[in-house]
Amino acid sequence: MNVEYLIQLLGNRLTSLATAKEQAFLTGDLDTINTLDSETNGVLDTLNKLKLLQGISQTASVTPFTEAEVVQNGIQASFGLNNPNTVFNGNSTGCLLGYDISSYATDPLHEQKIADILNYIGNMDSPTEIDVYINSEAIGSPVTGAMVFNSARKYNVDARLMMALMELDSRFGTVGVAIRTLNPGNVGNDDSGQTHTYSSWNDGVDAVASWLNNHRINTPSYKEAVVATPVVSTVSEVVSVPAPIPAAITEAVSVPVPETPTSPTVESTPSVVETVPPVTTPEVTTLDVPASTEGTPTSL
Image (cartoon, one colour):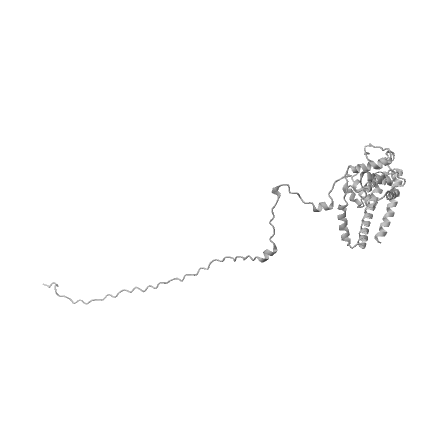
């Protein structure tokens, strides 16, 4: 099976799930609606991944970039397109980075569901394109492409995000309390039963755009995030870095490397051996003294 065939099968599955959900809404079967929502989200997730792969391959085939480079360029473009003042942001879920919708609903999966819808919507560059999408998702919707387009222009917000909110909350004003309150985004409605009614569907669509306008997030662009450098606030934080010595100087000047000093060699002093002549005992010369009779006592 190729990717295009799988995408077609999943598209057919989404159509059947949407039909089943319409019937469940008519009968008020909440359990079936929740089950169908869960299955729809799973199919959308798989479908979006297949479309992403298909888009990467198609882009790489008609550009000088490889598939890896296409992905990298897309990542950088998502930062560059991250402008909360963009009305029609074709960067899939990139518009979510410009607004804080965490307080819009109590459903913990609300933001994920909105992201899934955004991945499926595609570009909405004109009232006609918006009308086509709304009619494909909610037949007989009182919300028109002109209402969405004009409100997005009026408040300078993302039209696709407006559409995702209204689709998830009331299927563009065709189900729930929105039908009697003319409030397709359920702005001001809560789980306690409190509701807010508008005088026209156009005012109800305006309310969604106004809410987004009041919940912007100012985020730095990709280029600012990359080139931003810290500002040194005090003199003590400045670190003086010595300039490098030019290569020409280092090559021209030869600095002798001192030799490792060696211990001086001590010449051994030859030992002087004094030769002491042997001491000889002088010979005693015996003198023969003649016996003298003089003075010798005469024996009597």
